[in-house]
Image 1 (spheres, rainbow, N blue to C red):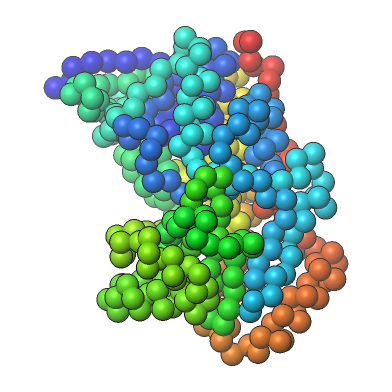
Image 2: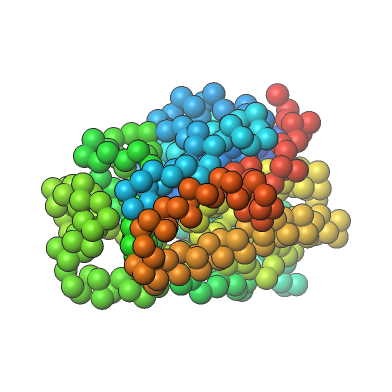
Length: 417
């Protein structure tokens, strides 16, 4: 039995980067917006720690960059990895055509809290944490008019009535599922195992190590922890767990003994590891009557190239303009929502395609890297800087991953302050 009804011009489901940015932009533009989040607090496990120069630019256009830089973070100005123990530089941000020649690595909770705080300064914004969305609400013609949810703190069922529901609730989107939209997932040949270790226990001077048939990733997050990623073949994790945690640490020790030693002292077995579902996907449709999907709800990114956050923030910036300009229930607004997919799909498809190609290359290394002599592998890597400038495809991939869709810009003309 429904106990409460809330109304808003736009209801955004999911307080991830895309949802939080969109809610802030809409609130600042005078739109009555409700942000609905399943979790009770921001202190929960997140994925997606990278914010490329393209997102840094957008934060500046939103007047958020100073606030973001005040949060715990690490600034990355170049990219390097260790190949058979020798450091190889693969990216110098100073060489990119941008006024923001750096990327940020940070945990999401503090950033999301910052975005919600900024949005909360506007009376037309409401935040609903600890609220679980159960279904979308439709009229007799099948048009989406809102959502059905459960406010767990209040112990009440709540209906949100709105002109537009924005599903920003991630890879496992309830909004997308309730609307009957297939996520369009592709198979992934690799999986990624995550765990955290104290930063002081690891001397990580690069973003990753490649050694024989193993790949290990390192991400500093600006605090006391270092995020570690270990690449495994798709479907291999159950057999690794069955062999036991000591055997898993021995695998890690082959590529970085420091990490293996820290695992023994800091981790409580497999319970302190997480297998990340990395399969990318592109839903067939991102909008319908009264509905818009953004971020991973519309197009699920893999971790390759750290593209999940940039794509979600770019989506939010474009959705903001469309919604503010045409927030009426007419055929015109439906056409404008359709413009979102037409605008974003080519760039997203390009990103997902390159991520899939990268996953295939990594799988090839897992399968055959052990047969490549270290001297040959290092020699090939050292010549890469001479080859990359003349390779349009490689240079294009680096620039696209680093700078994002450079045509996306925040429309500040909508702001009411």
